Length: 451
Image (cartoon, rainbow, N blue to C red; front, side, top):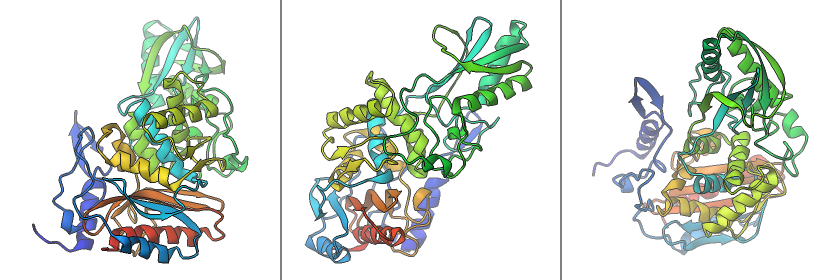
C-alpha cells in the first residue's frame, strides 16, 4: 500500500467524493460525497460500500480501550456535556457520560426523521405535484414537496422539480383543446393541522429559520430560491405564492392564468405532474443543509405511509412507530421532524445507536443518513467547524443548535481504522460558541486518540 501524506489524502479524497461526475442521457450531474468519510492511510484500502450492499462498513481496527474514555472524561471534566461513544460493529459502549439522560436534541432530531422516512417510505420514492382539471378551472395540487423550484431550469443538487416544467406541460395540454385563458385554484390539503410546530417560537418565521409547513409551496416557502440558506424570509402564503409562480409561467407559455382560491383537486382529471428527487436525495439535502421544511415534509410522509394524519402529531406518532419497528424507539420522544421544538427529547445513546444501525449494513435503505451528514471542515453545516483540528475531513456528523443547546452526533474512523459512532449534547449552554468547540474537540479525540 502506498503511504500518502494525511492532509493531502484528506483533501484529495474529499474532493473526489464531492465532485464525482456522472453523465446520463447527456446531462452532467454533480453527486454528493458517497463514502462515509476520507480515511486514515491505515485503512485507505477498505472497500467502499455502496447503498444496497449488505457488507458492514465498520472498519477492521481494534476496539479502543479505556484510555479513550479517560481522555474524553478529562475534556468533559465539568460534566456539562452528556454523551456516548459506541463501537459501530458490536455496539460496545466506549465512553458514557449520562448517555441515558434525555436532552433537547435540536437539529440532530433530523437523524431520527431521516431514518424513519427511509425505513417507512423508502429511498426511491418521489413526491408528485399535480395539475388537475375540474370543470372550467385548474387546481394545483401539492404533494408535500417543499423543494419545488420557481426557477425555469434549476441546477442545484438534488435537482428539484420545476413549477415551470409543470406549467409547460399544462399549457401544451390546454392549447390542444384551444384553451388560452383559465383560472388556477390550489389544494394544499394533503397536510393536516397547524403549519407551526409544538413549542415553536413565532420568531422562527420572522427571523427566517423556517416557513409555515404546507403541502404546496415553492422554494421551501421562501421569497427567493436558495436551497441551503436558512435565513431567507418566508412568504406570507406558501400555497398561494406557489400558484402565482405557476400562473406566471403558464401565461408565459401562452395560456393567460388567473390565481383563484383554495379548492380540492380530488376527482379532477390530471393534466400534468412533476416529481421531486427521490427520498434518498432529499434526506441527503436536509442533513447537509439542516433543511427544516424538508425535514417536516419527510416526517409527514411517514405519517401518510402509516395512514395517520399528516400533522405534527401524526408525524410524531409515525416516526415513533417506525423506530420501534427497527428496535430503536427507546430514548426518543419527538414533537416535530426538524428539531426546532424545544419539547423534543432524545438520549445520546439513542442517537448513537441509530447512527450505528445505518452503518451496519443490515438496513441498506438507511445509507443516506450517513452520506448526507456534513464532513467536518468541508461541507454543509460543518464547513466552518473542525478547522485546524487533525480530524478535519474525517468526522461526518449532524449538528444541532437552539438557544442554549448545542449537539453533535455522527460517525468516524479512529486512528486504527475502527468505525465509531458518537453523540454529544450540551443543554443550558451559556456560551454556544464554546459549547460547539467543546463538542468538536470531543469528536476530534474520538478520531485521534490512538488508544
